[in-house]
Image 1 (cartoon, rainbow, N blue to C red):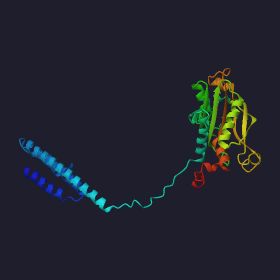
Image 2 (cartoon, rainbow, N blue to C red; image 1 turned 90 degrees about the horizontal axis):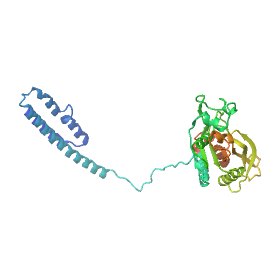
Image 3 (tube, one colour; image 1 turned 30 degrees about the vertical axis):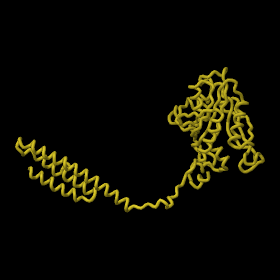
Image 4 (cartoon, rainbow, N blue to C red; image 1 turned 90 degrees about the vertical axis):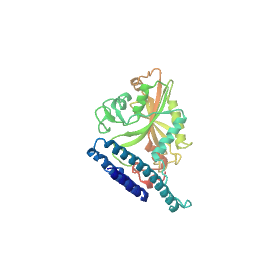
Length: 339
C-alpha cells in the first residue's frame, strides 16, 4: 500500500505541474483529494491491513495530502497571476470612448406637489404626521363627528374590509390619532393616499392623495385659518393669488367653508382653466367641531382649532393644466417626462 501511495504522490505532482488553467487544477484536486479521490480510497481500504500497519499508513496518507495541498495552493497562485497578466495584456479599454447614454427620471407631478406643500408648511412651523391607510372606523368616522347614518359611511362610498376596518377615505384619522396622543399646541399636516368608491373618469379615481392640516391651541380663530390659507395659496400658486370662503357643511368642522383661489392663469378674468369663472375651488376647511375635540380628549372650552384639506391631484391638475386625472395614474412616460 506504501508503493500505491507513493505512486499517487508521484503522478499527482506531475499532473499539477502540467495544469494550464484553474479548471484543470480543480479537476486534479477532486481526482486525488476529493471524497472519491485516490487518497480517500486508500484510507477506506485500511481496514484490510494488520492493526500495527494502520497507523503508519494513515500517517503517510496525511503527509502526502498535506504536501499535495501545498502544491495545489502554489499552483493556484501561479495560474491566477498568469491569468491576470493575460487579461492586462489582451483587454484594452478606451477610456476616451463616450459612455452609454444614461436617462435620468424625475419626480412624479403628485410627488412634486406633496413635497412643495410640505416645504411651505414646514416653513410655517408645521410638523408632518402620518398614519395607517387601513384604518378603524372609529378614527375615520366616529371621532370626526360623522354619525352612523351619514352617507359617507355607506358601503357604496367606502371600501370596508370588515364592519369596523376600512381603507381610509380621508387623512383626517391622522388628526384624530395625533389629538389623542399629543396635548395642544398642535400644528400638523397629514399627506397620504386615500380611497373612495368612485368610478374612474376625468376628475375622479378610487385612489387619490390628500393633504390635510390641523391647528389646535388657545384662541385660534377663523382669521388664523384664512391667513394661513392665503400664505399657502400665494406660495404655491403665485404671489397675486387671492382667496375667498363660501359657506359649506362638514360634520367635523363648525363653521365650515369651501375655499376658492383666484385663477392663477388669467388672474380672475376667466379662462379655460377656471372654466370662465375666474375662481378655482381649492379645498374644504373650517373650525374644528367641539365634539371632535371632546372625542379626542381635548377641552373645547379651553382650546379651539382649525382644519383644512385638499386633493393633491386637484392642485396638480390646476397648476400644470392637466384636464384628465387618469393621466396622473397611467404611468405614460410621454406624459410624465413633461414634468
